[in-house]
Length: 385
Image (cartoon, rainbow, N blue to C red; front, side, top):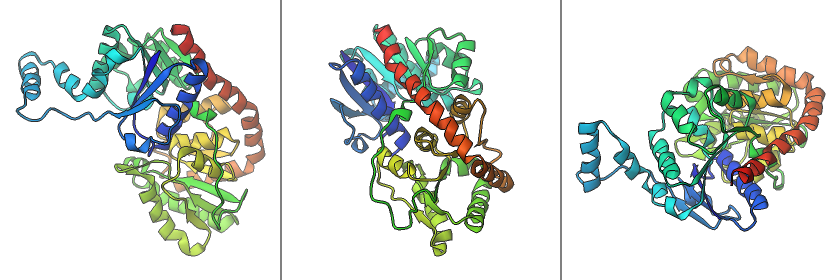
């Protein structure tokens, strides 16, 4: 059996890396003889990933102006208002491979949170037209994300694996019959331990992750984050580790966190982790932290999964849904509009400190159960084969 994982953003997004790492491991556990390939936007960042037979690029380039493909696409758009030939050209890296695989696993579950995806709909339509199996692996989708076109596309899938109960309800209420509840595979990812930096005080370090994505959507949130760090430094003896988790060019946590480091470096209690670590190495550092505060969902999953009390600077359904499934409430998840309120940030941090032992007890009980939910994905995949 030949399986293609596609819509992978590349491993400079450590969340994407974590999803692919764990998906491949789980699929190989279920189907040891399966041949797994990966289509990636940045294949050179994925060479360290194991158990993959081949990694190739998914470029999504438009046709060259005045080429035959450009003229054909323009003709159908102008006279028939039909963009499918344009989308087939842009997505040709995947479409040209349909004949070579039995199963297609879309690992871009976040994609369905961000507007219409006509190119991806065309890929999926042609996969199903060819009689191949199509799976959405670990999706997060909010009610506000749905449209008639998106629902029609989702109903094409043989299997929709929802990674939290909010998404499960949204999809079922939209009429999708092929929905199964799992948990994000990243909960299963192992950690790699490296030597600790000099300023890293084990069990007395607070991890802090902030992203340009959050800052762009709520610019005052950066100043509120500064005030939170001021509060931590003033009221505790903790050190603060700045943790980049996505370092792609268009959204680089490291560049944003350098500003935090420059502002606080003279305190000698704030340090910046390097930008070249892989997902398991960042998780190794997070495992030794007392608390974690993060905007990137998979950085917070790394913390949750090893029992570190975590405060989420949430901006999507996945953050809320994961917390809901862990705690029965959206505990310590601040929405996009809330994170520019310094007093709310400080109050949430103090709540996390005060309830540290209780949070650890909940995580100790729930994480094994969540991991079992993650492992169900491979069983559901086996059922449809």
